[in-house]
Length: 475
Ligand code: DUC
Ligand code: ZN
Ligand code: ZN
Ligand code: ZN
Image (cartoon, rainbow, N blue to C red; front, side, top):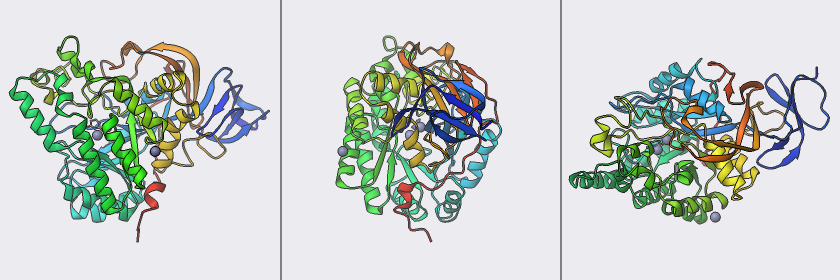
């Protein structure tokens, strides 16, 4: 046989093109895209289907402990199974440095969790919570060389927040070693002030989580991060932008000529602050607690505007799964005393692509090529995985999703593969659904059944981001 596998009859969609073509795969890589390819040992009929690059979700949390807090509902096995079921082939979760710990030691903990257990390929962003001189001067540069070429910093949370001085030092280190910095932009003091004021007034239901961190709090922090990036002359990625106010800060900076990248997420076009009210202000609103919180339907339109006009390069899930029931869940006794104790995050890696396809492509807001860019290609380009991942062309890994553009599906917990005991998107009907996921040529999911195994996913040693290299000043 000329090929191990040939996919025939489908429409190949990349960030650039939509063409009727066959895809020839050998040894896990795409070797040919064209017409009338030779025979494959195995052949797949993709008639009526789109053949797209496997999704890359560059923002997920798996097996990430929160300080003294609840256990995540997904480790690497269930989290990547859910990713694969949703048409993804690569995820980039975080390796969190607890204060006082080294960066390398922290990364190794996550490797122990992930290696041999993942069904999708994976890399790690570092989370830097303790930027000591040895962390920034020694550990970071060597880890960036070893393929951990991006990291995240926080402007809020007791156990993660950095001072402005620390942010500037971290940004400067990123510039020196050519790493890309992701920034969680919400202002610590404003949130704490609002939280205490709301609690004093007895306003502790999950709904007040959103009230405690309105868009102005995110806007201010976004502006501050951008200013620090300008001062240190370093590109940054503003993650999980939730609405018009922070989006406009990013757009302003981009138009000013600064290299500011931005990400938005499923929940900012699919959930609203009213969801946090639950049924009549009961505690079921905790199911939607995440940060930044979902805003309102006008914000959805602002996010679409940012997507259409290129303010956002990536669309991620921010999959951060917790349980609802149980002693560590969002509805625990402790969580019911105040929104501040509700674990912060929602599951969504499995439905990111269907929701964006349905609301974006089917409802006419974006093209199918923009869909591929937002769910795969741009993630690969920005995070140093290009040209291995993120397109369908000779030389790329055979990471492919076969997509049925007409299939209607109602999102329900019973069809999800994640570890959480609920989905915040319960009952949402979408058009367009993944029917097969291939990882390096291996069929990992077919018709909702996951056929891949733990260990099929490999660690990805990423190159530097081209966006960061342009600025870098490496010795
Ligand atoms: N930030 C994230 O990126 N995810 C979940 C919660 C948070 O604060
Ligand atoms: Zn964050
Ligand atoms: Zn613009
Ligand atoms: Zn996140």
